[in-house]
Image (cartoon, rainbow, N blue to C red; front, side):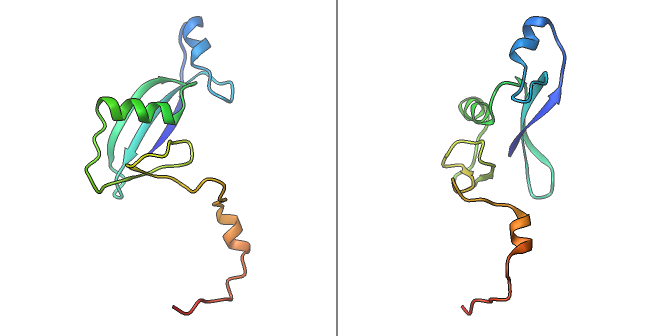
Length: 109
């Protein structure tokens, strides 16, 4: 699950609230897909200034249903919630770090 921005245009009033954190006029959309890359949920039409967390909370209160025991994988922009798997706060997850890691040590389990 993630939010994604699409470039948009509108009236001067709409442009004022649609500016994202990079200064572009965008619409933010919340989308979720399964492991087969099929979309399972989409919420569109949000102003670019709206956060992923806000879109998720609104979606959960209106029409996004998550079956018990099921979870969505999300990034750190989402809230801590019972239906989301988000990264641990303060832990850096960068693939480049793994590429430079000394992987000669193998744990015996």
